[in-house]
Length: 117
Image (tube, rainbow, N blue to C red; front, top):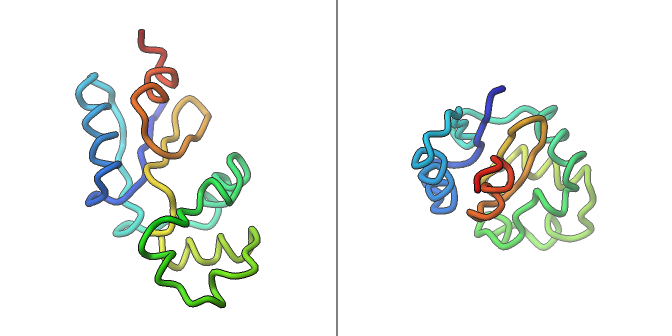
C-alpha cells in the first residue's frame, strides 16, 4: 500500500506533515502539485470523497487575490476549474493512505489514520 502526500514543498503545514511521517519512519511518496501538476481525475476523486468546499482553500492568498467574479457563485465545476488552474488553492496537505483521503494536518488525525497509539 502506497501512501502519498500531496502539497507544495514550501508550505509550512506540508513541512509539518512530512516531518511527522518521517519522524515515525513512515514510507511515503511526496507529490508537489505546484511543480509536478495535478490531473483532473485525481482532483475530482478528492472532491467526490470530501466535497469541493473542503478541498478548496478559501483562506489562502491565491484565493483572496481572485477577482470578485471568480470568487462569486462558486460551485463544484467552477471550484475544480480554479484549483486545476492554480493548485495553490487546494487545501494542504492531501494525504492518500489505505484507500482513503484526508486534507490538512493535525497530529491526532494522522495518528488515527496510521493507527498509532
